[in-house]
Amino acid sequence: MSPIYLDNNATTPIHPDVAQAMLDCNLRGLVNPESQHQLGRESRRTLESARETIGRLLGLHLEDIHADHLFFTSGGTEANNLALQGYRLAANNKNRLIISGIEHPSVTTTATWLASQGIDVQTVNTLNSGQIDCNHLESLLNDETFLVAAMLANNETGVLQPIDKIVSLCQPRSIPVHVDAVQAIGKLSVDFQSLGATSMAVTAHKIHGPRGIGALITKHEHPPQPILHGGFQQAAIRPGTEAVALAVGFAMALELYVANQVGHQEHLLRLRKTLESGILSQLACAVVVGDDSPRLPHTSNISFRGKDRQAVLMALDVAGICCSTGSACASGSSEPSPTLVAMGLEDEIIEGALRFSLGVFNTDEEIQAAITQICAVAEVL
Image (cartoon, rainbow, N blue to C red; front, top):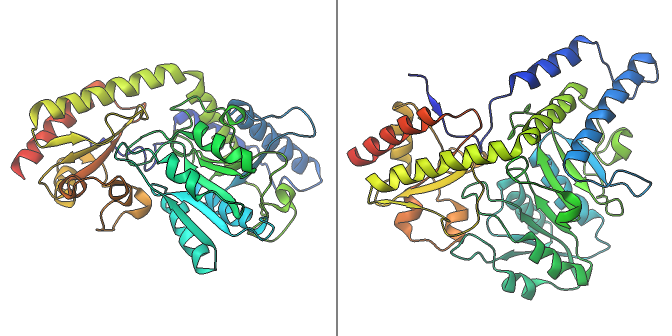
């Protein structure tokens, strides 16, 4: 039997229509969209059409001179770096950065580096539910705060964060809020204007789009300072020759996902419920992390109490089940998940936790087969 891929939070297989759209784009002979000749102008029109499509589908204000910005990047990691470092450079001597304790490594590692440069980095406590403690956040806010960074949906547990509450706490002080929405777009109805954040990071490869492209979205009046320096592309905020085919692939992936978003959500939620109920009904040691909190429909963090997560992961790999112990950007690490540690969970739950993340191409038959293999492996170990 072919491997069953349940690691879609790490990346998703590219949609065939997306791959075809990118191939067609490349075969058209498009060139550098900054070039002023005919092919350059055609490339620019194609690029800006893709940018407008992504912006429209994600709820950006696009209509006038106060339009929001969408800066293409190499992915979510660069978008988060541009936000944290770029707003620090634009901070007018403000020195405090606040992040949650459950952020992606692209945020936490950047924050650690900024701390080494003299930035006052504060981390918000996390509740057992997997959501951040907004009361603690409020106590950390001060006039020196130049940015609060909080992800929309956690990449390990799928737990949704109270962005509306976070924004409401920050707005009276005019403190910008950056949201990592990488795992959320497509799985939730993400509308940038309604979200109220100052900036938002997104990427294509979590929604069956190409790897190598993402974007930082910002309010018109709040662009960051550049952290890369070169040409004048994208208002010099993110210089470098834009990858037209990747942008086309991003736009196509988002269009395909949003066109059947409700159907995808129902499909993923049904598969997740089947997976969790099937495992919990057979294994007394199993517990679903964040079960009592609002979650993404496709993400399930299941702990096999008393088991070693690495041993279970390797045994499942041999059995043909692809999953993970946490963020793919921290793969290879034997350290406990910082997210689960921040939640204050028991050691045996942290040590036995695996992440199963579903995709729209997964089938009911695959989930039933996965349940059988997972339970068999857990019982043997």
